[in-house]
Length: 328
Image 1 (tube, rainbow, N blue to C red):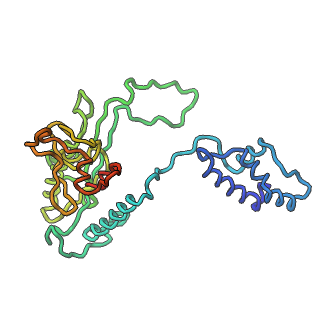
Image 2 (image 1 turned 180 degrees about the horizontal axis):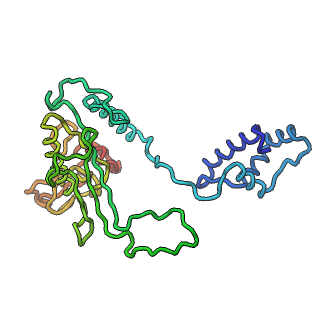
Image 3 (image 1 turned 45 degrees about the vertical axis):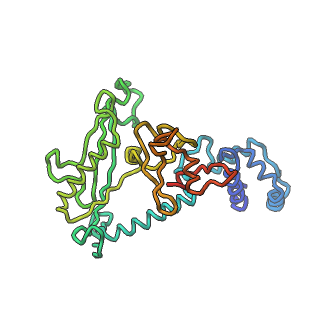
């Protein structure tokens, strides 16, 4: 019956639907038995194969799964999609695409072979007519280890076993680099000061750990190199991924993360104060009591007071949780 498309196709659709509803997304031989026992399947079998057996065993269902290329094991991981359809995520993606298309109007476009496909047509930009052309400068980091090597390949049983190096992967070397379509690596000469690339030996007993301060220093140098390379006639568009070293907030940035509900003597940290926010009418909103306050001089006022000042807290209602969205 598996060779008959009129039977195999509905069975495949039935199993696919089960894979979306069963726990873990898996199916088993029992699901094949369930399909065969369906009234419409029974009628089809009686009509197509009169007098034949209209039921199957669990073992037969398992064999049929294998014949239909279902394999027992752990499903391979695919791309994460959780949250991709959230309204705020879609708005962000749409805004990003719209912004990129505006940037693209100022770029020289290349084909897959690296040949120029089109030149931009000039129009007024904030940077001035001599800096109209926009050059994307991409950044990435790669880490290499002393014991990096191929671990799989063809071998013969008569070959002697090879000894593995001690110490696991060994010492690491991180390379942080900027690349462009126009010039390749971002450099302005062969001297060390003309290289935007840096090498970093991570480890507590070596160079330490790569931080936001390190990437800031590298970007400052990359900007100088870009200015020298372009002669001040282009504008760089630096592009970074979402690594934590690329997303550090300013010390006084507005943030509702771990914000206490009530007043606090030193939040977010001793000696650190958030900058003022803005009330709905555009006037500044300080998040701290005055220094001459009788009982809490200079204290953080707490999220509940912030919300009250903005008219978001109704009498008898609980404090809203999405402060980051509502306030900042």
